Amino acid sequence: MDLNSCRVTAETVQTPETPSAHGRRTRRLFIFSSLLCLGLLPQLSCTSDDSVAAGGVDAGFDARIGVDSGGNDAGNPGVDAGTLPAPKTTVLVGSTLVSLKKQLASGGTAAQQAALARLLQAADGFLSIGPWSVVDKQTTPRSNDKHDYMSQAPYWWPHNAHPPSDPGTPGDCNVGFYVQHDGIRNSGEIDPPVLTDRFGLHTMIDGVFVLALAWFYTGDARYAARAETFARHWFLDRDTAMNPNMNFGQGIPCQPKPTFGRGTGIIELSGGYLSDLLDGLAILDLGAPGWTSTDQAGMRDWLSRFLTWLTAKQAADAGWADPSQEATSQNNHQSWFDSSVASLGAYLGQVDTVTAAAADGKKLIDDQIDSNGAQYRELARTQAWHYSIYNATALCRLAETANQFGTNLWSYKNDGGGTLALGMDFFVGGAERGPNGFALNPDCPDGSTTQSAATALKCSPPQVTTVPGDGPDAGYVPAFDQTEPFYELHATASEANDPTANGAVRGSPAPGGVDMWPLIPSCRIVVAPAP
Image 1: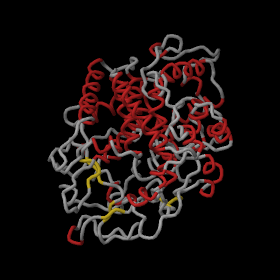
Image 2: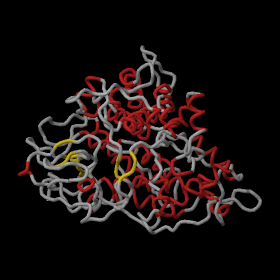
Image 3: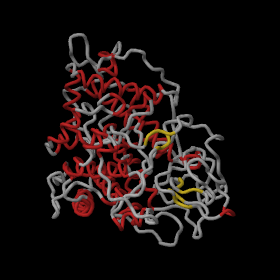
Image 4: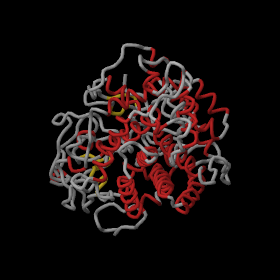
């Protein structure tokens, strides 16, 4: 079956809400335990002890982090805090992780203990779910090879739909072409994992990242083993492995010209997930039990082939993805493309690749951020708050990679006076006061509210006010989440010594109620789950 012949509604397939890297706020699963507690994944029960969220720790906590009653490191010798080399992470700084582990081995701060407790809750949840594979889906891409990744464009709806209340007639091309409704996600068609691969990809990567960190900080071999299972099943095992391309990402049904995949689909991997995967792998590469040299070589081969595909131009009339479109889009897609290429180059030891991506980062700051910190292309979206933060997160993660290779994007200022830090400071009003504190572009005139028209006019269309919540029964939640730029502001305070961002972080609640920065210090894409 292909995209045009198989459609299942959300009522038919009851499944957890698919984390999306494009088109709505993105949920990251290192707050996985909170989602489990909400009933989305029932394998982990919630504690009734509020001390975890408040900064306390659960019973047996010291034993799990390898600290005996005397405060000495009693963990796995393979991850001994005194001898552990720094992982060659691409966004996270390896030497910083080692320093944090040493602090934990000596007891750590209350904030570190709270972050670790949340991390271990999430890791424990991953021990009893998965693995996932591209061959699990019931649909088949145009290549007739289920090993090819496949997904559907999130904002495209049947011609007779009136979203979000009326989904129209999914897959019925007789009623007309699918049309775009920017910012309104077609959950019934794009989310069920029986149809597309996005849920499996995102959950697998979240698992590798969370579990690898849990092993790093505790030495518990169960976490490493599960992360390894996830990676092997998705990338290495012959029967279940994904081919190293995204030719059929974000296809659009019922188009005048066949659209089996688009370059925009790459963001489902590039949008923060790929660099998390690479950082998780880099931690396992330290010598995680069971992670063999054959595993490492297999992953490096897969990633090298994916980078080759990612940086090659595909035939324009092929009907599937052309990565070069992402490399030149000038919006959040290009920012995430460059961030991902930089991370791949860093992991694979290709310094020139990182250097070139960092140079592109300067051009993106030139083109995207004005003297006030506004990003007019993202302000032309119907979810301007989310997409402005989303783009800034990509630039932040690119800066974190570039900084490890000698390029400081935080200190770069464009000819108009725009900087990455100013782009982050632009979110402070919204983080502190909500929608009334966030400045949009002037309103678009009637008839000029499409994304392309709004971008050309530098105006803002009417904003989407609600988005699908977490889980099939969650309904809709407010689209504007004040906690969304929390970790971006954290990074700005730390990397740019920015007092405005520092003040905003100190006065803002953390997504999910627990600040993960004390153990995972980088720009994250994190929002709190629906209450």
